[in-house]
Length: 181
Image (cartoon, rainbow, N blue to C red; front, side, top):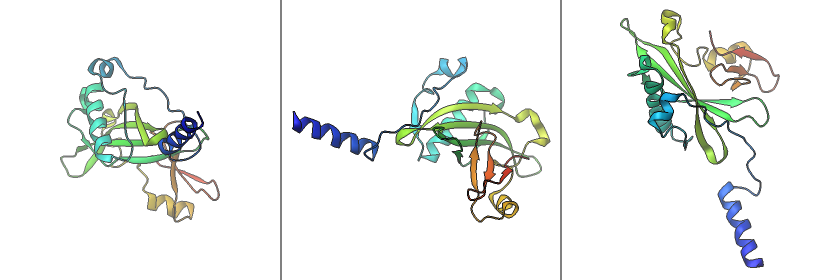
């Protein structure tokens, strides 16, 4: 009996990576009917695999909003949670190439990151209707611009209510700068 107890404790330690249990609650995916009917979007993905998240985000966006079909996924952006117990997030910006050159953001796909670095689809937002008002990047305010405004070398991109509306934070002073335009 003692032998099996030691094995179970050791196995739990190996699986979680520590002796403590993970306590980050990730919201259950609340998928629109279109994503539920296709299937596969309610599973978890490797949060450390940006290529997979970009592909899944692009696929989910194309199903959720026909206007986003063909949008190019850009590099996923990590967004930290401000509140204790909130999951961190990864946002995949979707871009359309402008005829005059450059990109504009036409959509955003969020993933919440839970225990074991597993990412779960959060939401898909189609911002293509914004036209020329749409930002050229996500976040719209660069880290360098936020660092200059906050007077810190390493601002933290974080959210309080939605990873799609993050802010840059100075972790020392708590000062913030909106990351959107």
